[in-house]
Image (cartoon, rainbow, N blue to C red; front, side):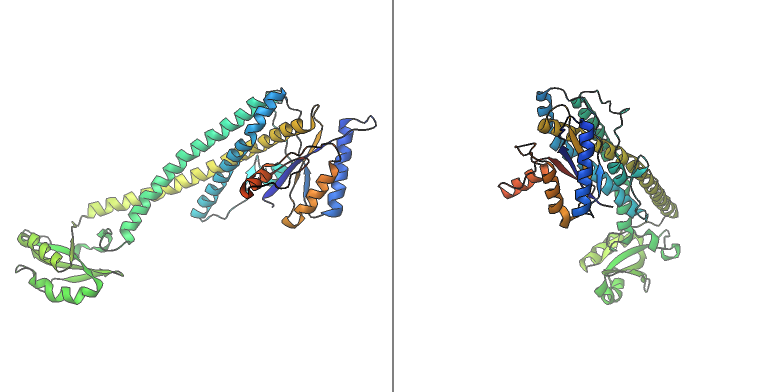
Amino acid sequence: MATRYWIAALPVQSADGSSIAAAKTALWARLQDSISRHSFDTPLYRFTVPDLRPGTLDSLLALSDDLVKSNIFIEGVSHKIRRQIEDLERAGGVESGTLTVDGVPVDSYLTRFVWDEGKYPVNAPLKETVASIQSQVAKIEDDMKVRVAEYSNVKSQLGAINRKQTGSLAVRDLSNLIKPEDMVTTEHLVTLLSIVPKYSQKDWLASYESLDTFVVPRSSKKLYEDNEYALYTVTLFAKVVDNFKVHAREKGFQIRDFEYSPEAQESRKQELEKLLQDQELMRTSLLQWCYASYSEVFSSWMHFCAVRVFVESILRYGLPARFLSVVLAPSTKSEKKVRSILDGLCGNANSSYWRSEDDVGIAAGLGGETESHPYVSFTINFV
């Protein structure tokens, strides 16, 4: 499937008393023949634009000024949703599928585009149609921001828990490393947890009993070791805990505050399981919403493109509407040839050139003039 398409509109010139419809059919046949003979690998389709309500010249000019900016916004929302879909599918280990619009693949929706008159009446003022499309897409973007923020919040909570469980011993949660038999808690005795630098373990074993006179001899046991630290227990009389901590800190050993509680450990486990379930439910829900919203935005975008083709064609070729609008997907190597074909089919209908937004962007970047086309043309990118 191509991801980059041209939408173009060529002027239709009726001669010998033939109708505009007949002239349009003849131009379509000439275009098909030229493409098949000179650029046979370029897909070519009709892009049917209905007879919309053009309004006044002033209203068309005012609308034309906003169409490029509005297209950038709508296209941007489409791409945001598509990227979100890819992220959610990847997070769920789901193989990316073909995105659809109204039940058909996105490329088929474009190449077989049919105007939805129920949603966008053709006799409505173009300004109202464009405003309706913009409003609908903006609402979807706002809704997406809220939904993604909620999902990201749950992911952040899980990330914080995971960091506590897998980080350095100096900061991580120790509850899943401690067993009940590792801890001694009586009226007079207490077990502390010491975080010992990995390369200071011999120093710890040689010195911990002398850090205070009320340390139980040979009570230290290593429970766990990571890349930086080792986790040791030490049992001593409760009355000297504060002094022991001070002396341990002076030697470079960190005493972690910890109280063994099966109830608290079970509560943390249940919290983690709930967050995991919430994350998966929200991921699935957000993914389904993104599928539906992408379909809605893409459909709105294609209707917007139809309006844009209509407005620019009327401004260029005049009234009544007499243009042939098409969709092409030339490869990079065929672009120059296809441009030449389109140029040749314009004849001498226009002496002024209409510049596409692609050309405007390039010109702005280069700070000078660049190629323009004697027909309406703009590019849409699916990704």
